[in-house]
Image 1 (cartoon, helix red, strand yellow):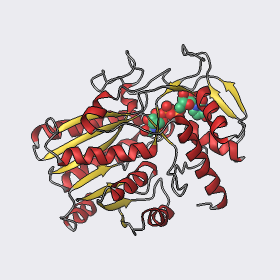
Image 2 (cartoon, rainbow, N blue to C red):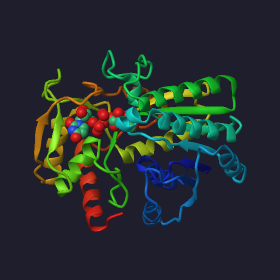
Image 3 (cartoon, rainbow, N blue to C red):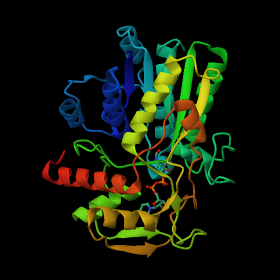
Amino acid sequence: MGKILVTGGTGFIGSHTAVELINAGYEVLLVDDFSNSNPKILTQLETITGQNPDFTELDLCDEQKVTDFVAAHPDITGVIHFAAFKAVGESVNFPLKYYRNNFYSLINVITAFNSNVNLVFSSSCTVYGQPDQLPVTEDAAVKVAESPYGNTKQIAEEILRDTCAVSPDLKVISLRYFNPVGAHNSALIGELPIGVPQNLVPFITQSAIGKRGPITVFGNDYNTPDGSAVRDYIHVVDLGKAHVAAIQRLESAKAEGNYEVFNLGTGKGSSVLEIIQAFESSTGEKLDYKIGPRREGDVEQVWGDVTKSAEGLGWKAELDVNEMMLSAWNWEKYLKDNPF
Ligand code: WQD
């Protein structure tokens, strides 16, 4: 099996993908700058996989360092590029920080491999904005981004598509995630939000454990069955497995052309209130929540059409929202007894 470079490898989705790559027989090389992750994740990965991951702390915005790193590892057969800043709200306040980091890192990786590598890119359903039709398919119109973060994902896809058009040896799959949540069933790795969680599920688990006050449901006056906004939540372990399937597609001759896009979701939407209910019923914990105003920039409802992923990647999400909530809760409880 090949050797896969995982940038952002100690991050939430990167670490879970590293586990699935190792389970699938790949060697992994993890790089990270710890700007949004914790070195302790490396020890956790060793406990989960029984292997001490090959890790290098690396600033991907430093072109020379990236070039030197890749030159020193000629046996890398593929790259999964997670490394990027991803906080929607922060990107509005610090756009240049986001454009610089998210583009410099991507361009430096492509350049270091001389546009000659199999590359899986971490994209997002954010590119769709509020789709005109649901479920949203990969050929749906990309809408004007609601945030600089979302814009970096859209432009990064264009950078990759345009580079692939003139670089036949650069083979890329962009994976558009819907809402990644949950944690590994060992409860040894999971989401590690910095400060007050902006995302729903980590706020729920921190509220349930007593770290935060009541949850605010951002709006219950949407045109949805219960009035709260709808998203396609996907278990991070299912997401990790999808990345292995994407690498395997790039290694096979199945890819159609050298730039493809796939949705990674469950194909099912859940409202905020349904997620709260799923958390309570799967954990037995009672949540304290109140209804508040809509959050600026939120879309009303979005969930993915996952037909193409099923056919092209031979992958389908297997874990449901109850397993997402229970695993997220087990991870929060682990953190309480083992603070990072
Ligand atoms: C989900 C729903 C909120 C917090 C973002 C990015 C996306 C991806 C996932 C990176 C929304 C509601 C939230 C709270 C609430 N990130 N909510 N109370 O905004 O769908 O997606 O994170 O790839 O790109 O855009 O996720 O978890 O913030 O919100 O009611 O305290 O929960 O309004 O409807 P979002 P989220």
